[in-house]
Image (cartoon, rainbow, N blue to C red):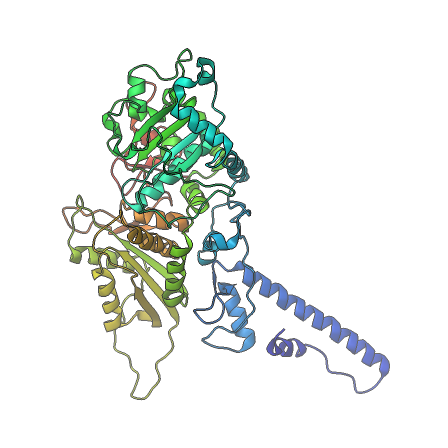
Length: 576
């Protein structure tokens, strides 16, 4: 207990009597009792404030690496007498290291620094992890450890795949010992992370081992291994039949749609093919049969296939909620349907130590001192043209109109020469992530020239402005992932409509974003932004297919948890 707290406690103690041993002993007893009460009350209040903080922050000096809760700062400053600066305090061990059981404890911390530390930088999630999801993840890890690359079961599966003609009809028709789902990257990093998460949920639901196939170098040293005791990387040099799958399309003979068109799917008297291709790229709805992946007969065709390879640039996870066979399992995994990406993304997507170094260095240098962090993610699309001036005005109309950023100081300061300026009442850091630097520079100049009303201090930062997307470059992807992580540390987020980069950032944060709505006739819409109904990303190209009638249907009206997106016409997303 600090001297100040001890002094405050002793003020409540009665003064010692001038005479009498009995009275002296009674006074000592009373004094001790009151001291114990005072210390206990102080301790309870301290614990309540420490663990009641919404986010854990740096304890001493903005560049320190020890952590206390935001609430603990108030107590520490009050009892130590320090004003305007954090005291040197012993860091409190952060709670919920495993994110409510979401993460496995079976990793060495140093192998992936971000795995157990990312949660320190974010507000505590309001979305509870279900015990059934935790059990499903531990079960999956056991399967992956038994069937993953490097195991004898994997070698047998590869041999069976390479030489299906050497397998007897009875053996070919028998269920495989281990079954696999092979994912390969497509499009930009945001799309890749969303489709990878979607593929992982499908692997969970179908007891398949997810394998990460990246023939190039653009995704190397980007993510940590997510599954303990094994790897999720498909070994190079195996020369499997689908090694060139990046060139697959809707016309590929082994595609699910073509198998169903030929009437070969699910036939019990016919051995299953050794592998099958699922085409879920943005053009998959052009083939009448590819959308049947989201129907029971499509899943029946895939059930006995040992290897399923998948290409998608879509966040197709909401489509899995359309399948009746998965309904009960999904409801147990996600009692709140609108937190699927939030939980699975935090489980699966851990930046490598290289990327994590970028994240923590930037955070420590520019963001750690702020009481509030505002993330602004800006992306423009060719199909939603708007000028730089109009988009800047839209950002500021949203930020000021929704009280996300303070309005400008209207009158010049009354400070006289030689008078010290008043310290800021609140520090707000604004992180702008965009391919272009104009927006952050204009926001920075705005507050530099006019100042913020209410005595707030607004600092504006932008890590990179690369001008164009280069998803085929490793360093570009590392910087993009670092920015997504920094965006996910925000307390409030403004994002561009339909941006997968923004989806990842606010999804990992567990925040409903303020969405900059798409322009109308190249002009700012009214209102300029809306608070999203959900933290879930949008499935941009859903099937819109009625499995019973084999005809078009409204996907947004088929099941309770799936509704149309606000930021992308014809898209659907999970809501509660």
